Every structure is written in C-alpha cells, then in structure tokens.
Image 1 (cartoon, rainbow, N blue to C red):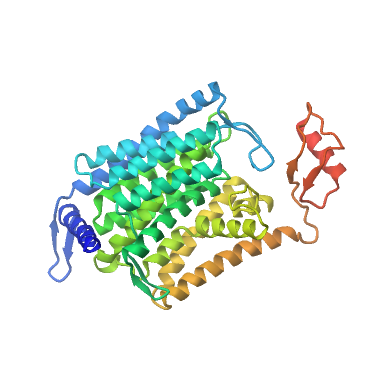
Image 2: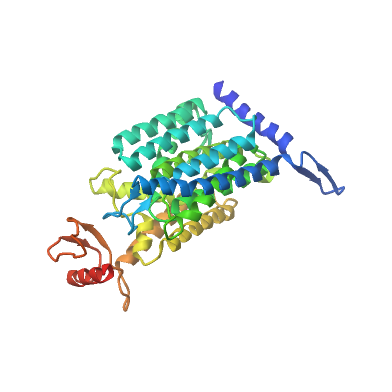
Length: 436
C-alpha cells in the first residue's frame, strides 16, 4: 500500500509539472498552437545554468588561493599521474554552485525529497574534504557512504521500483527495491570516486550524464529535477574550465567533488528510471535500465572490473592500483584530455547504441551485450598496450619508487617497478635529463 501511494505520488508530481510547465502543445491536424506558461520552464533552466556557472567560476580561484596558502595539494606519488602539486577541493565550488542556483531557480516550490539530496551532498562534501586533508580509513568512509545511501533510500524514497523485465523481473517489492537501491547508491559513489584519476574525466562524464538527464527531465515535464541536473551542468562547465588548464589556476575536484557527483548522479538516475514509468508518449523508454547502463558504462564497468581483479589477486577491492581504464589509455600514449574525451565519446556511443537496439533485442540480451562489449573493449586496450608493435617506442612509466629521490639525482641502486622494455639504466638517464 505504501509503495502504491509512492508510485501514485510520482505520477501526480509528473502530471502536475506537465500541466503547469509544458511550454506549448501542437495540434498538427488543424495547425493550431496553444501557448501555456511560455516563460516558466525555460527561464528557470537558464537561471539555474547561468547562476551555477557564475558561482563556481567566481569561487574556484578563491579556493585555489586558499589551498595554496594552506598547502592543500594533491602531491604526485607512485599511483598518481600528475607530475606537479595541484590544489584540490574543487568540489566545494561545484557544491555551492549547483545547490545555491537550483534553490534560487526553484524558489519555494521544492519537493520534499530534494532537500535530502542537498543534505546527502553536504555529507559527502565534508567527508571528501576531510579525506583530502587528513585521509580517512576506507572502512570509515564506507560506513558513512552506507548511512548516506540509507538516508536517501528510506526517507527520500529514491528506490528503483521496476526493472522493466530485466532478467524477467518487473515491478519490485520493498524487500527487493530497498537493498537494490542501497547497493546502487554505494556502488556509484565509489565508482565516481575511483574514476577521478585524470583531468576532465569525472567532470566530463558527470556533465554528459547530467546534461542528458536534464534534457529528458525537461521534456518529460519534471521541472525540479531538470533544474537540479542543469544546475550541476553549469557548475561542471565552470570547474572544467580550471581543471583542464595548465598553469597556476589549475585545480582538481578531489574527493570533495567525486563523492558529491556520485551521490547526486545516483539519485537522478534512480529518479529518472522511476519517472520513466509515467513518461508521456515518445519520451517513455521501454528499456530504461539499458539507458541507465549506457550513461554509466564507464564508471560501472571500470569499477566492477577493477574490483574483480583485486579480489582475484586476494586483495581488498578498495586497495589502490593502476588498473583503471584511464590508466590504460594514459600508458598507451594519450594525453589526459585525449583519454577523457575518448571516454566521454565512448559513453555517448553507448547511449546511441541503446537507441538503436531497444526495438530489436530483448532488454536482458541488450544489457548483457553492453557489459560484454565494454569489458571486451577495455581488455583489448590493456592487451594492446602490453604488446607494442614493431617500430613502436614504449612509453616510459615508473610505477613505484620505494625510496625518495635526493635532490635531482636518481640513484642507480633504487629498486624500481617498471613497465617498459627499456633498460633500467636508460630510464634513470632519461629521467635525470628531464629533471635537469
């Protein structure tokens, strides 16, 4: 009974926003166009994007200045791909940009569950902030993530109500919906945290996902979630302006940003899957879980793949390593921007493929096919990187240095773990040359 009332509440909310916010309806037969509230929805969307962009754009340089003054840097080490000390905590500007602008754009008509999204975002922000500064044990972070996910699932009713026939499962009972939704939240929080390894990747993927969802929410008449998605887009555009720069104003989002993106993206994905049940006409996706997977194909398959590799080696799934897909692309010779752009286009390609296959193959087959294609692609890239062709010069990569360098000299007796066909002496000579 409670779940039926919740479904009816979602449908009522969508019907209400469709009635109040639809900009126009067109009658093709008699060529009549009726205009309904032509300014409400477009102006709200524009305000959310513009305000979030300006807030994030103006705050980011101030955060960079404070980070430099307090020496809050992301320092290079054996696992990180950056070679310079870079300020972190760009997630603070993203959080303030999207929350303040979305609240302002929604004005007083804020659904009861959206403040819980803000609260969950704030929890993730503070946890990420502390982790960026002091480092939090993985177990403690995991407990906080579970508590935050439970907050949204139980009080915010962010629950997956139907699997649309995936593995022959349709409508879900509370006993299935609650734990599944809980796992989706925890998984996506960690997935976005783990893919934040190169410039522009986490921000670029989050922008692609939120922009796609924002357009769908807008067209489906869910004004509040359209504003929330578009506000996040505006903040991410401003952040990427600094994240992709080279120079003194470069910044990383850090755990403050990646954990924040994970919780917000997870909430919007679950809400879109539920609202899709009542979406009008051509906005209804028969295979909604397939489109969710397509949007999340990089963080979902990369994280699950890395977790399986670590467990196979007898390690904790949270043990850091350099087996992520972005590491593979960088080691193959791509720049950060090239690797991030490739993975964003990779995501868009899967979304387009979902459109093409929806009408031809059952959902379960398509879902498994997407997973197979993604895992196969990454495996191919990893295998291709390990077997350079004739005439190719392998990229020099030092994976770990067990001792610190003294001055500008790298001593020959330092034990290195290398991934290259070059001799150790040649690597030491080249690195000393670059340092000088």
